[in-house]
Length: 89
Image (tube, rainbow, N blue to C red):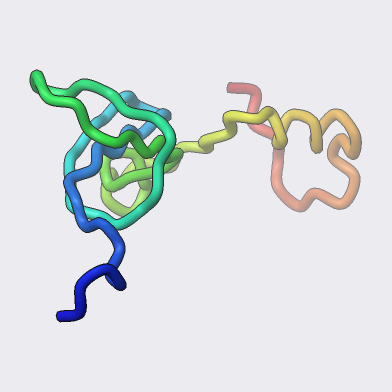
């Protein structure tokens, strides 16, 4: 391989923000933040969905709405044009 043309392939800490799950894998992704995990510093990547929180892997349907977009939409449009009932959970 040629020197100096490949990105830095290193261990990176991924943090699933929806359920506080963390895992380490190797990646070339660029990050600005770092975090300590199991006594070692890693570049940190924050993610919204991982295999620990995705309905396909968990078997549970869950709405992940960190920005309040669903509630904002419901306030703006209500049930106009909706073919499904709004859950009161």
